[in-house]
Image (tube, rainbow, N blue to C red):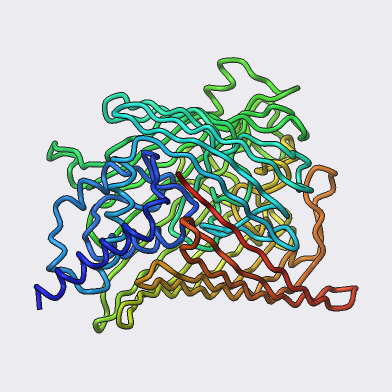
Length: 497
């Protein structure tokens, strides 16, 4: 039996090498572009093959590589052995391939309405060319893209460009890189790829190995990333700065816990002294003009946590996860948060012959009532001073469904031995559920809508690159207008050399 598994793994690695050799990656981390790679990483983490936290992206390769080097694939089940082969292939190419260039063309009959982890496209037409390099302590990526009829009217972008330097066990990065914080695959409340990446300077722990001291070793492997982003000029408060903080830990194999916190501060017309900046970043309260409403927080603060627990019940792998992200706090204590959105999910994995599948169900609730009136919503991602809210070019950098939404998603990810795969998402969304919007010109003004949408995409290696083809079919019910049925076709092709 062990010899059969070993032969199966060796054959899988050889097939991957032939099919994906033109798709080698040279980044020091896993980005948010590949939902199939993430599904494999999560499967190995649930099984204890990968021991480091895996719910913060970009996800550093360093800790994953250390775990993979300790594994004997022949002792794994056939499904996990195949996932190991794929992840190990991408890891080896990331660290051994010094540099590569790529061209990617993507688009659809309509712009993408929603973004999920690994979405195929964003605008009606996207064309990107890039070159990336990974050295022993230095990495960079130069990327330029052109877009047809973009949502934000930015036809030329430098998104995905970065420079990174390793200093000890820390990675200093400057650039515009997509982030994803949390265990969800369809969306995330605090950070997702819904909005374009923001220009940032970040400091991240490279290898999340556990503390060696007995006093702290009990928290297990841990990650930390922090830094500052600058938001766009075309907003209510131009050039607002955004403080970002994310930490995760994995005290036992089955449990991963994450803590997220960000605050907007400075910007045109706002107080931006060293003292006010320090108070914003440290979460202090402003009581100078406290009236009946009481003290307020410096800046526009958002904080939350997420948790994922995995186990095997009756020989079936099960993952349970939950995220809470909150708009305010009653005090300076970081745990005293209120006005919270909720996100939860459950998933499992299974395989047939040489195919692996991940099945998940997720729920998003951004119907948040702030203040004393429990029926007064329009709170999530909003702020009285920073009227553009927690958004970048009018798109929330949290949930893809923005505020006042209840969304149910059933998803299935399939991967086959020939490196082909598919992603299927069935959504039922109640958008702008209360039918009201924020009374300012900077926040989105969506209609009340009940939406049923099926999204499907299929990827396959072709012409020495990777192609994906897909589409959506949706039915929308509006409060005052007739129902509307829509269909969209989309696709992408990427070639790396």
